[in-house]
Amino acid sequence: MKQKWLLFSLLVIMASCTKQEPMEALIDRVFSVAEQQYVAMDARLDDKTMPQTITHDSTFKSSTIYWWCSGFYPGSLWYIYEYTQNDTVKLLAEKNTLKLDPIQYVTHDHDVGFQLNCSYGNGLRLIGNKDYEKVLHQGAKSLATRFSPITGVIQSWDFLRRDWKYPVIIDNMMNLELLMFASKAFDDDSLAYVARSHADTTLKNHFREDYSSYHLVDYDPKDGHVRSKQTVQGYSDESSWGRGQAWALYGYTMMYRETGKPEYLEQARKVARFIKNHPNLPSDKVPYWDFDAPDIPNTPRDASAAAVMASALIELSQLDKSEEASAWFDLAEAQIRSLSSPDYLAEFGTNGGFILKHSVGNLNKNSEVDVPLSYADYYYVEALLRLKKIQNEK
Ligand code: GLY
Image 1 (cartoon, rainbow, N blue to C red):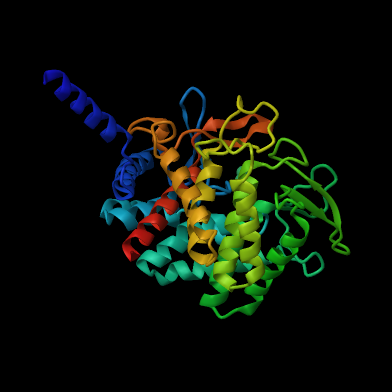
Image 2 (image 1 turned 180 degrees about the vertical axis):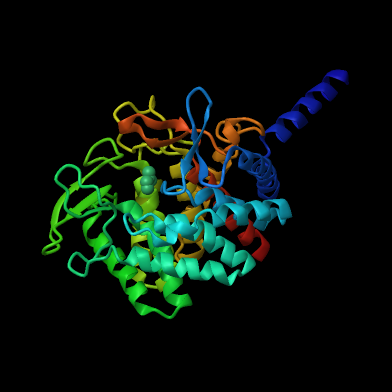
């Protein structure tokens, strides 16, 4: 009898161990960590700096507000406020958003979209501050100055390495969201025109036959012809840099949401298929830093790519009315569950205050390899909120 009881208890324990954590509980658990980490992190900053990463000896590293990632900390604070409704978080979100005021006048690179849309954009959405709207409008106008009707795209960078004349990186798709917002808010079709032209031209020139994306396409500014297709942060020119595929997926999903243009939805689905079916996508669905890295599996994962993909896939699963939609949702959920495990999710008081571990900035330069990064955190909490909204609508 005693033995039977022991066996029964063992079976109950085993069953409870394998039971999946309900998504609602998972989201709650993660936002509790995120709230504590991000509130504490503010004490490490002054009025001109933002969190960047930690070094390998765990030293916290901040950036200036001009670093392309400066919008992600205030943006994550807004998301954490949206979930927790904690007024302390709201105050920190406002304070850190306002640090970025000068960014609205930046015309020397394309990252204004990342910087302002994540910070002021989320702030406007949540508290409706009209001053934020003006900053977003000015930022969009600054970004649009980088567009050329000859190339049909926004120039990403001004620095011209390796004989570049007009470099455009796939990441640039992300900045179009700011243009689409400002076009609608201020009834300015010229901004939407720029965004659509950039998306159309990128669709034509940035993708291979298997719908993987090149990192960089260099154009001739005189006649718009493509001069070369290369990588900067990926393993090789013909490899598929992990985060680049994530930017492509997110960019076309977002542009379909904003425009309803069927070609953008098709492109997002094709990129999603490339990611989902790739033989080098690991079983926990957190990609290696490059899908074609030579030393797989002994090479770093990129949690930031997984976070961007998960957020995009959740949105795609809602926009795509075909039977593939559930596959996008399932892949996103698998990524979220992996990122929310101790393998990737930091414990409070560790990881320099960041939420996720194990991202890769630029491995080729041995810069930010296997470290926390503010954009991994941002797209991760965004993905969790998107999941939460779907649950609430059920
Ligand atoms: N936009 C730069 C990066 O993805 O690393």
